Image (cartoon, rainbow, N blue to C red; front, side):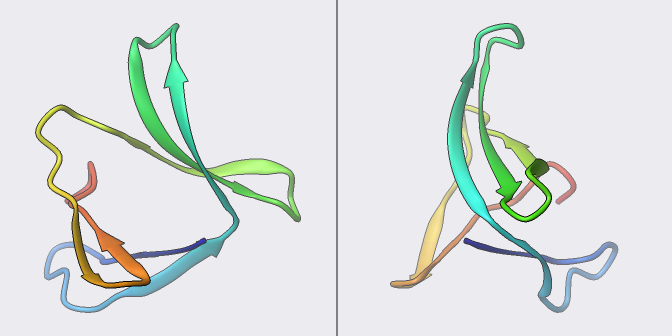
Length: 72
């Protein structure tokens, strides 16, 4: 998976942040669900997004999903 984000305040263009394995995680301790991206070269988590109840996910292209992140 390649992770692209936008930068505040304008959110005008996409910036590639990292590449790795994206996992869907249920965190029992934090009582929530997350997307977590792990870098396979560094063997560590490099990004996390909590999945909130009203998250809106769109698929503008067959190979692309988008949603507003916590920094949105």
